[in-house]
Length: 157
Image (tube, rainbow, N blue to C red; front, side, top):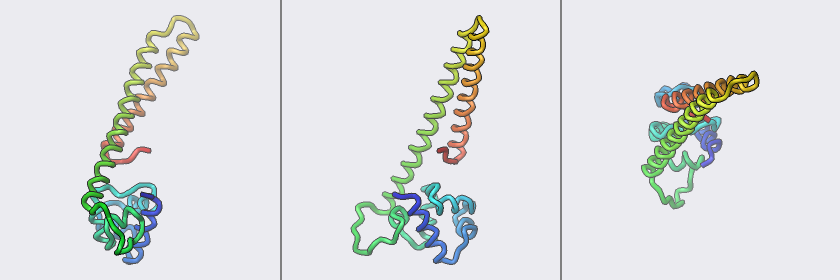
C-alpha cells in the first residue's frame, strides 16, 4: 500500500464529490488537518473511520488501499472486512511497538541514572556522573512522551 497514492486518491474522490477537507472531516468526525494528512500521504486513516470514509467517497476499502479505482473484472482475494481487520491489527501493532520503545527508553534511563550514582569522586568522574544523570532524565522524559502520545491516539514517527 502506497500512502501517497492513497492520499492523492482520497483528495481526487473528495474533489469529485465537491467537498472541502473541512466538510469531509465533519462528516467523518475528524479534523480537517487529519484529512490533510491523509491526502498528503503523511498517514493513513484510522481503521475506525475507513468504512465511513469509503462510503462518503463511494469507493471500496480495496480501492482506498490501492489508491485507484480497480477494474471490475479484477479478482480480489480479500473482502473489505478482512482488509479492515488487517488494517486494525496493523495499527494496534504499531501502537504496541511505540509503547515498547518508550518502555525501553525509560528502563535505559533508569539504568543510566543508577550508573551515574556509581560514578563519582573526582572532577572528571563527577562531570561524567552529571552527564549520565542528564541523559537518563532525557531518556525517561522521551519515553513518557512517546507513551502519552501513543495512548492518546497520535502517531509517533
